[in-house]
Image (tube, rainbow, N blue to C red; front, side, top):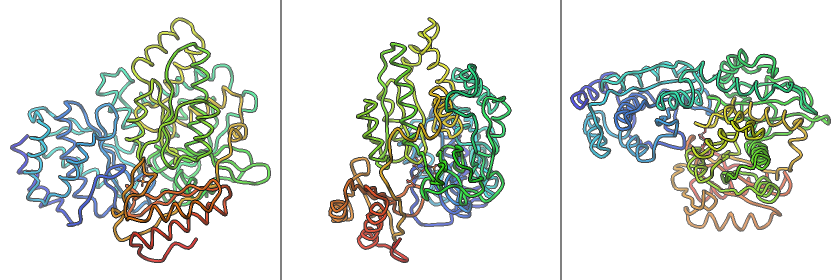
Length: 537
Ligand code: G16
């Protein structure tokens, strides 16, 4: 492979030249930017994926997507052998490679190869997948060029959701233990378990098997149509937002941040609406009540529903497994209170980014992790999985249910569609309507804002992003502002996927949460180099 490093520089210069001198960093979910700025980054990520495949002697995944970002953006994230996000040391390598000049590429590759002590004689295999953005196909070609120039093989999965590529990579690398390594294998595994759990009948108590599905005009809309072929009549899903502008006035991020019903979905009272994001790894539920009031059930509500159900199955089965939940600073204070006090399940707080939550969830036998934005899943330790399967074989009814629930879950990463089927499973088992689910606890009113600053890296944080370290004095200002609001809480952090600073505030009324968010956003603008107009509303 080493002999090909010089070719890598030649192809870079002729076809994918570096177009910026700005320092670029592998962020919360890889590299993201305007699509027209990404060709050279994609090409280099193809090179890096091939190296990582040699390093791990396993297939590596590359997903081309900017997920919740607007359609003109795009991005790339690498998937490690067992479906994990790219290892932190390799995020550093990714940053090094992307910031090298075209001529420096061979030296950068050699350095990475040397540091990681890679066997460069291994034949690398890289799976690539992409979302529906108009720019994704061309950017995918750049990734493929990168893999091939250093002698790697490519398996192109085409237009696919992020969770499917994580699943396929895992199954490919574990020899099919987790499932059949194909898109079809994924549908079959999840749907079979879901349909089995429904064998007692589709309607139950207040539960109605009907959902409206907001596909964010993205790949999630295409994939749900494939799912439906396997679901029979177990769930009636009406698909909306399958052919418009990606993430525009719809989808999980819009619904969560704007706290609004998605455009394009009929506004019918008491129907569950399921919104997914641009690559279908996040999910948010919402509904309009009989008084025409809008309600949103986010990742916190999903996490508490799932954790409560798993806890009940564990208790009834007699299995002694440690269940825990992982959230981020964005978790609504009321959800954390409910989980710890009412459910008695331990809660840990991680930094934003599923990689951080996933890592922390590994400390439990069964770790439920969810970001408030609807990104999350459940992971089981090897021992927990074996104990559950074993008890199920011995006709323990609750362990048997848990064993089937396990197959509805995509443990490899947060998965909007698998999470939706899991939520539907729990609601069905409990005989709950969305209203029954929602009333478990009331969210504290909250508000999120974005502030544009000249350089967002001037904001640094600690304590799982709950405390701002720099610019000096900003945290004191926030503390002073928060003091004035009952149940007030606020924090700020630089986004890892957009060129902005995020502000979160919650308080005992919506007016107060709005007011607090605006004040804190103003302080960020003043003390961290705001640009453009100062946030007012
Ligand atoms: C990505 C990450 C999520 C994160 C989100 C926002 O989601 O995978 O873990 O919560 O970005 O991150 P930030 O606040 O740093 O911009 P997605 O769905 O966009 O891939």
